[in-house]
Length: 33
Image 1: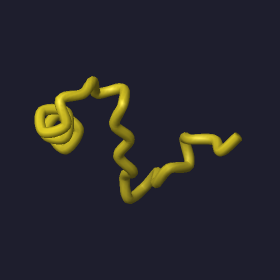
Image 2: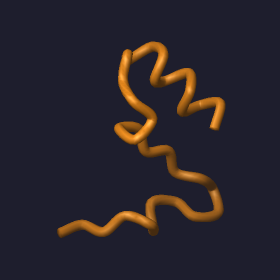
Image 3: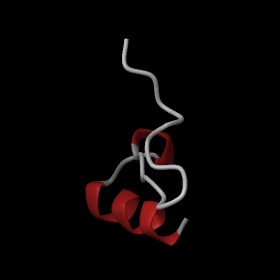
Image 4: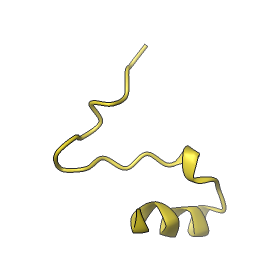
């Protein structure tokens, strides 16, 4: 959560644009189409 907030401030973007993988989940929640 803090990483997403920091990235949004630096990149001047919305939180929905940022994807951060956790150690437990990784990017499993994303599908490659």
